[in-house]
Image 1 (cartoon, chains in turn brown, cyan):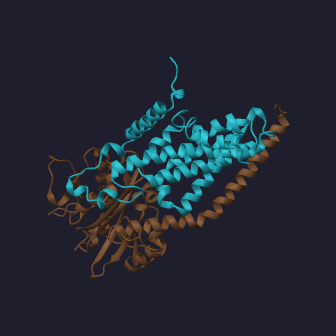
Image 2 (cartoon, chains in turn green, orange):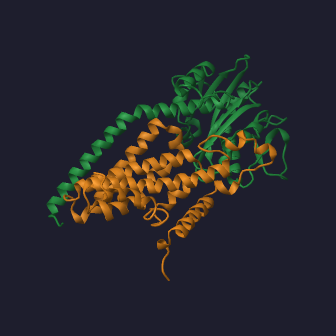
Image 3 (cartoon, one colour):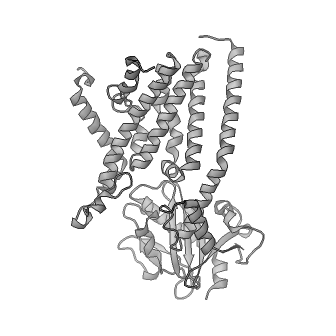
Length: 240
Length: 209
């Protein structure tokens, strides 16, 4: 039916106000649950990089399990600046690495998570962030006390190709990183090369790329290099 | 309430008027979210909820909606429902919502929704529209589940996340998962096969030359 313009204006105004308040209400009610989910997901990724937290999906209460494991192993966190000094007054867990990477290198505050293993060993966990083929990829790299040898890694992605680039979040891809070194014999920072078959490689600094997932593999290589380079002063200072 | 006419509204979209295999609507998401059964199931459920309630709301309002802005009103209703569903998924089944990623948001542009609103809800009573919405949602949903069953079983060797192939020891005798099944083209092929079977059983669906 045809209605007057006034009717249409009033109708759309009322509709917009009703819908907006409904959505605002839904968003407010659900926000605490959503934020908790994000927090748990992040804690789980950090734990996975030191080979912990694998029982999360079979635990009775996933949240309680993850919170418990995180509190047990990641008791210490640091925030460091571009010259590798620890700065106080910031919560490492709340630092948004994406925002920090947009800043000038001198103004960055970078989070470091410290894991105390059951056997007394200490691992330092560094977040990494970059881009793959279709969107962002991110993860955590944990180093042994020498600040050189990789103790474990965890990577995830937003929308890499299933079966190809998306494989970076699987164990068969991540396991070979363990034991690789970021610095070469002459203490130069070389990070990790994600190499195709036949490409020249040094055993200590290379892992296998994913066939068919070349751009994601290269993206991951750059992600690790760029992100770990930000921590270079911190690594050099604390190297053993 | 459940007269034979109303039951038809519910059952027709399952077969003779199926939104995917007969009307060929909503194909995009059918290709995208059917790698595993769990996301496909949640997606189907979300679409059923959104089609049912958007049909109900639009049908209730149909006499008051000004014709000139009816598409806008329909979109606002659909978009709000989808945002609410998305928020609920993010709050309570975070892992699944991560897998579905943008596709929940894209329910807004699912042609089935606007098609039902324009063709049915604008001209019928709320209860009938509600049933029609549920019927079309299920018609879309069962195809999704069927496609994802084949893709997950052949592509990942599991059913609803349960590793069937591993349990029966298929890998130890040399069985290998079919990599094509996890790529989008596989969904297209399976939907094609379903349409083929449906048409060979129901001759009336075949177009005359």
